[in-house]
Each structure stands twice: as structure tokens, then as C-alpha cells.
Length: 281
Image (cartoon, rainbow, N blue to C red):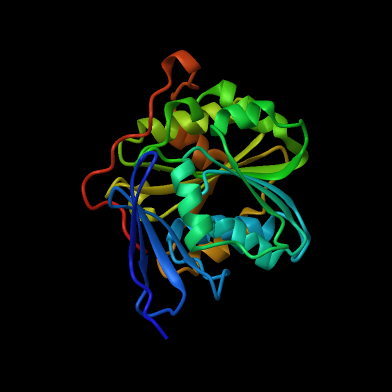
């Protein structure tokens, strides 16, 4: 049997590379311009290698009773790690994946195709434009994991975007976003303030070292109109190899402080990560 070999290709927004994992037979790491974007194991789609994807997975596991099919909108495609995870853990789910990079979509469908019958539909479109045009109340979960290079695009950070995302969700729906920042957290605080203007309940999942300002890192924003099961989420995230903390309620309001919601005219991308900030784990 031939050994898998790396694949490098120019895509719309940079140079994508698929690298096989020597320890897992059909597992691949996707990077774009050297920044890790996704990790997927085709034989074991429930294996979530990146810490932030595990935290998103914990939320996905707890938003509804185990195994219940969901309608999920994914903004940002990557190697389709989370769509594959939902298809495996919640069979019968209907999922739309919106990815602006046509070349990246073609690379993934060619090299890491999704099996037929998984209910995953791929769309080449801008994430905000798709969200604004989507039918109201059409999704149980919206997951935003959109990065231009290593930065969240500015047009996905404003109250207008947050309102569009909220409109797509059903009354019991949950919004999830992968964000990244470091102390003094101007971007992260502004995002929490922005989504607090649209959603009644907000939580943040991040490693304590990131929250204490020790380093740059990912943070998962969770927003909904109903109380989140933060106790279960706290137990699950604390049990990970790299434990995380779930902030909510008064502690999170203190963290937000006087940060102002972001309007379209004031929106900026998330900060550029310092060199070496992102890797597996």
C-alpha cells in the first residue's frame, strides 16, 4: 500500500498544504500559508485533534439530547472536521458548509471527500452574505470558524452580523464562534459585548493561561437565548488534555467591562497572532 504523500496547492487565499499524520493511517493536517487550519481523521471523524475543535465538540454534544439530528450552518469549511463530527455523532443531520475559497473547497473534495449520504452540502460563498440571505429560523446551530489567514475578518465581528446570525437560528438555537486574542483582550471583549446585545446568554471557553493574559490563544464564544448547561461544559472542558474554563454570568460581565459593541463602520479583524502561536494541541 502506498504511503500518503503531502499535497501542496495554490488556493484562492494562499498556499494550502495537506500533510499526512504518520501516527494515524488516514489522518491529515491542513495548513494555509503555514498556519494550521484543520485536522481530520477520515477513519475516525469523532477524533478532534485541535483543542478548540474539542471545545466546540463539547458544546455540540450538549446542545441537544445525544444522537438527535440537527440542522447546522458552518461558516468556514477547512477540512470539514466539525461537519464530519456532527454527521458521525448525530446521523441524519442536515449541514450547510459555507466557504469563500473555491480552490480550498476543490482541494478538500478531491483529496478528502465526504462520503455520500452524510447530509453535508458545500457552498462557495461569503459567510456574511450567506447568513444574511439564509431563511430565518433555519438552523439549530451556527458555527463560525472563519479566518482570513490567521485573522477573523472584520465583517464577521459587528452587531449587524450578530443580528443576521441570530435571525438564522431557531428560538432554541446556539451560536458558536472560534475567536483568538491575547491580553488586554480588546478584540475578545468587544466581541462579547457585541453578541451580548443580540443574545440573552453568553459564555466563553478558553484555557486559564489565555484568560490570565499569559499567551495568545483561541477562545470559543457560545451564545443563545436560553440558559446554557455550563456545569456540564465545565466538567467536559476541564477533563481535556489542555483543560479549559467556562466563563459566564457575573464573571464574564466583569471580563467584558466597559467594552463597546462593534458597529460595521468600526469593525476590525482579530489581531495578528504572534509567530508560533498556533499549532496542534
